[in-house]
Figure 1 (cartoon, rainbow, N blue to C red):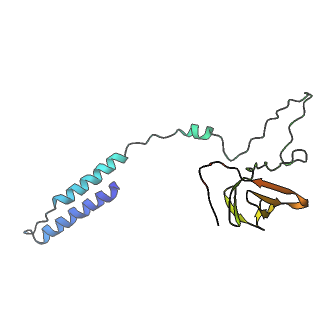
Figure 2: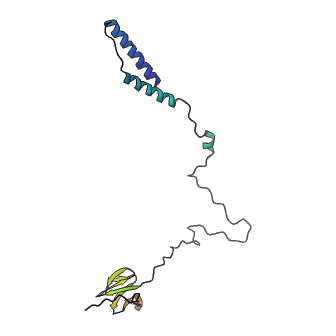
Figure 3: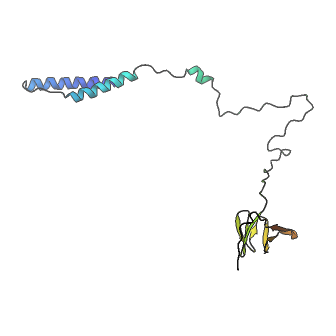
Length: 167
């Protein structure tokens, strides 16, 4: 960068000298704004000249490669009577899906020919988990499952002050 500035300065001086030799009465006037820009450039160059401090190369070379896998250390020492834990993917250590615990079905409301079970509205014949809504009574519903399984859900009164009258 200094080379370029120096070459530019030399070319400007030679141009100035050439103009002076052609017509001595013409003078080249540099504007103060250009001096400020050049001063700013010089300041920036001085700022980047000092050597930068970074991490020593020896430290970088001592770091372990994160992409290399380490061999697992055996938990069971040789000669002990304990069995080693099964390895993943082996026939003994078959991975099973975690059991999902479902919230129990709760009958929350009955309105006309629809029921609110665990926050979702259903009609007769629709599927509720592994059951089918078979019958709706005044305060209960019958859910029919596979192999003649039957589940009856009852309404529970939570607030005696609210009464819904339908005609």
